[in-house]
Image 1 (tube, rainbow, N blue to C red):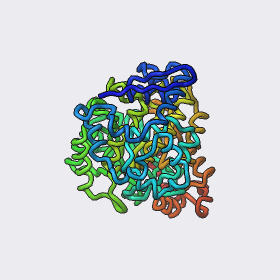
Image 2 (image 1 turned 60 degrees about the vertical axis):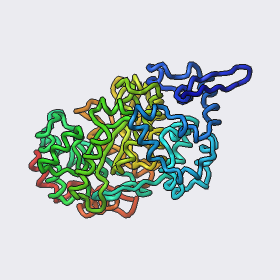
Image 3 (image 1 turned 45 degrees about the vertical axis):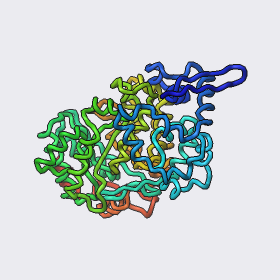
Image 4 (image 1 turned 135 degrees about the vertical axis):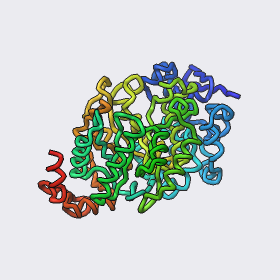
Amino acid sequence: MTHAFTHTAGSTTYGFRDLKDLMAKATPLRSGDQLAGLAAQSSQERVVAQMALADLPLTTFLNQPLVPYEHDEITRLIIDTHDAMAFALVRHLTVGDFRNWLLSDAADSATLTALAPGITPEMAAAVSKIMRHQDLILVAQKCSVVTAFRNTLGLRGHMATRLQPNHPTDDSTGIAASILDGLLYGSGDAVIGINPATDNVAQVSRLLHMLGDIIEHYNIPTQSCVLTHVTNTLQAIEQGAPVDLVFQSIGGTEATNTSFGINLALLQEANSAAQSLQRGTVGNNVMYFETGQGSALSANAHHGMDQQTCEARAYAVARHFKPLLVNSVVGFIGPEYLFDGRQIIRAGLEDHFCAKLLGLPMGCDVCYTNHAEADQNDMDVLLTLLGTAGCNFVMGVPGSDDIMLNYQSTSFHDALYVRKVLGLRPAPEFEQWLRNMQILRGAGSDFALHDGLPAVFAKSMQRLR
C-alpha cells in the first residue's frame, strides 16, 4: 500500500506520489536521477521535499518498504535483520530530529556503534539528504568501524590504501613493478588488489599465487585480492589457490544483483569458503565489496528509487557479511550518473556517511572518468574531505591513472599527502613493517620516506629491469 505526501510552502502545495518519490525529489541534484526522470523539477521543489522528509517519522521506513517485501530479497534482509532494541534509542524521532541528534554530543562513537544495527539504509539515505557537507563529515568522523585480517584497519588516526597494480595484459613484471612502487610509498595496507584484464579461473589463480608469493616472501602484514566474479573465486578456492579476500560488486536490489550474477545465498557460500581457509592472522573478515551510485539504474533495476537510496541499500548486503573492506567507486560509472566534480564530491561524502552510520568499514575510490566534467583538483578536494571524515581507505594507483580500467583515481603520492596533512598513519602492523624494511623513518604521524631504495628490495629491482 502506497501513501502520498504533501507539503505546503507559502501559497503552493506540493504533492509527492509516494515515499520513493519524496526521497528522490529531496535528493541533491545529480544527472542519474534526471536521466531516470526522478529528480525534482526545480530547486524550490527539492527544498520543499527536504522539508517534508525532515518531518517524517523514522518508523515510516519500517512500515513502508520502498521495494515490496515479497518481491525483493534485499528488502527481506533489511526488515528481517533490523535490530528493534538498538533502534529504540531513536525510534521516537523524525528524520529532521535524527539529523540534529546525530550532530549532537550525545551521539558519540560508542553510541553510534551500538545504534548501527537499528538503522536501515533508507533511514540513513533520508537523513543524508537533508545534511550539508560538514554534517556528513562530522557524523561520519564519529563512526569508528574496525576490521582485521593480517592487519587492523579502521583505527582512529589511521587511513589505509588499496595498492592497485592493474596492467592491461596482466603482465607479471608490470604488476610486480607497480607493487614495488606502491610499497615504497607506504601503500598497500588495506589490500593489494588486482582487477584482472583476463577474467578466467586460470588467470585468477596465477595472479593469486603471484600475490601470495610476494606477501609471503617479504612477510608483508597485508592481504591480497583478485577482483574477479565470486564464482571464479569459489573455483579458485576449490583448486587450492591462496585466496585471502573474496571480492564482489553488489547492488541495492535483488534485480541489480541478478544482473551481476549473484544472490545472497551465493555470497554466503563464498564467505563460508573463505572463512574455512583461516588465512587471517589477526582477524578473519574475508569479504571485499564494491558499490557505486548508478549501478541499479544502469541495470534498469532501481524500482523507481533514486540512485543514492539504491546505493545505501547495497550497504545492507555488505553489512550482513561482516566484510574487511567496502568501497564506493564513486565516479567510475560516468557522467550519466554523476555529471561533474561537484556531484561526485557530494556522492562520495553521502556514500561514506551512510555506510559508516550503518556500521561498515567504508573506503572510497576517489575517481572520475575522462569524459566527466571533473579533474584531479576535484579529487584533491574529495580526498581531503574524506580523510577528515575518517574514511577507512582510499586507492593507490601508479600516477593516479589506471591504464587497464581507463579511469583516473588517486595515486601513491596522494595517499602520502592526505596522511601527512591530516596526521594519519598506515595500519599499525603495516606501519611497523614499513619501518622494519627502512621504507619509513620518523616517529608517529611525523614520518617520512627513506631516501633511496631499501637494500632488501635492490635485487627485486634488478630482476624487474
